[in-house]
Length: 466
Ligand SMILES: *Cc1c(COP(=O)(O)O)cnc(C)c1O
Image 1 (cartoon, rainbow, N blue to C red):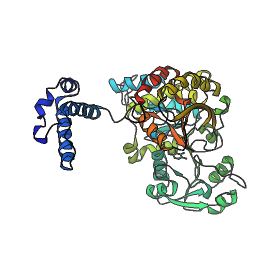
Image 2: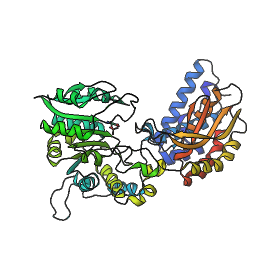
Image 3: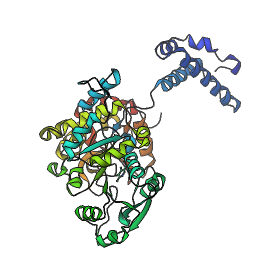
Image 4: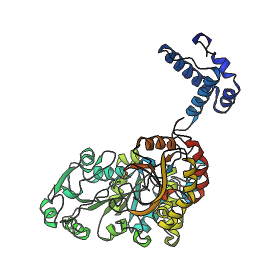
């Protein structure tokens, strides 16, 4: 046991082989900081009567501090939560084509606002404009930071100091404090609510139309469902009402997939092409929800309205960068080949993954997890699970799935929290889901190619007491 006066000096610790090795890799500055932090922690603890650790233990603690300081904040994780488009875990994983495109754009100069044919100046929206129009039937399109920005920008452009009529059944809040009434206020538009929570009729809209009306707006109720005695006005009727009054009909679709998900046995989600065909003059949707691309907000619609939006100075503040556009273009191109979409677009591949396939994977992985948890007071079994799409898409629908479920032996639910913490502490953190006294690892989002990496690290779970 060392005395406080015998604490090794900074230089002495820097010279220790393990520390020197890490300092070589991550830099002397980080190593020195880790040593100072550790020595300060030891002195503080000693004041409260804690024993001063031996040099060996100090070296180990310093190494772990260096490694933690050098570790990136934004780390890869295994998403075994059962929520495919998990907002806190980055939503849609990008397909290889998009990853290649964004790496190119990140690494090299690229024709972002440059017309290679004429040598003249270009418009960054031209990177995806034609593709969006081709896929949605719109005349023009523009892209901003996310769908919240798209909704804000369209309101700020088309409805400042004017009224926007929305059904009371659609005054939604999306996670992260995006609320339709608040965004309206900030955008400078006046919200006019019509109808009731469960039922809104065409005459409700008709009576609210007036000289100050800027638009009729439909907001897709993405993250909840109103069921039972309900009525919403069909889009074709809303478009006719708006056009009869000489104002546009605008739809915030939220997720907005570009393809009919029903072909993979998934529930139908409204598409931009349907809204536009029904008479919408402008639609907005996210890039990283069901579309399966990078974070972005896409506005598609009439040339006139898109032209006005692009002239708003806030467009410049909300625009996307080249990396986003590169990934978005690559993802949109995949939609041109619908036959191979479910193989190539990661989001659809994960959502369409058949339950027997997931169950077979669970059977392959069960022995490894059981072996890793042999000393833990738990049981591990394969159970049917139900995944969700996530990001507020199709909130009531569940996808039949399977996974590894850990239950405590006896009534020791605390053990699950310890295990959950250990799973998060693995080299590639494993994020599961605890509910009803069980820790569930839904395997829908675990790629077959990642299985070995997943099982190899399980020995790091250790014993419950360490
Ligand atoms: C998700 C969603 C938004 C916000 O989109 P982000 O891309 O997350 O900014 C807005 N409106 C609706 C209806 C949504 O579902």
